[in-house]
Length: 218
Image (tube, rainbow, N blue to C red; front, side, top):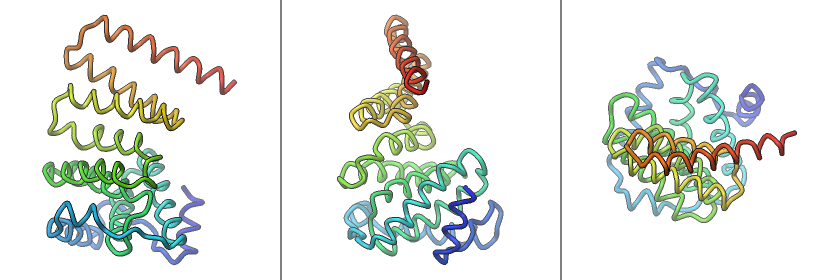
């Protein structure tokens, strides 16, 4: 996290602001208004950003968003805002779907469920539409369904979405987000009343994969 901060400052970026910062709040509201004034189609059909420096900068912010999510969650709003700003100004990068996923998470967490779900669904469509973003599909599915769409969609469909994230991760060789999606899929299937024999089989599969992971690490 600290290393990314140093790199961003060298690239001329401002340090992320903490939740509660008045300028961040005003920026957040302005971005929401901008997004509300744009149709889904216009957002999905934005130009592709080909500037390598911009693509790298956006990827740095995507990496930072993932880290602060677990270490300094009060900064995620600022990071998400900057990711959206870069996307709206310069176009779609491979990590652009993550912009909408993280910003949608912030909206949903502040009670703006409908707006958050809209961005979550946009992120899912964008990762399908843009081949350069396909490697991020398991993470986008994880973020959108774990932090946003569960507010509005049935547990069963959310479990199925995480199962799709698991399969996508297996195909891409993304072991981390594949297993994470599988874990959530099993949990939600149990909570939604899935047949317990099916749950038992899924748990066995999950345990075997976790054991295989530990053996590889050893």
